[in-house]
Length: 84
Image (tube, rainbow, N blue to C red):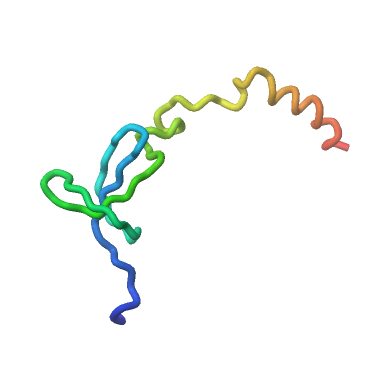
């Protein structure tokens, strides 16, 4: 391996700002802050959303078909012109 060309791959603490969920994984992300987690200090990266707060993964996402008939109105309005 060549010296000086590889990113700094290390353990990083990720924090979900919407619910405070924290997890440690390896990453090359650049960080300026550090935080102690489970007795060890890690570089800190703040996330807006993670799998713990994203509607798709938590099961709170609304289906596109349950949007008050908007999809059906779109299909009725534009479906005929697309078929021509």
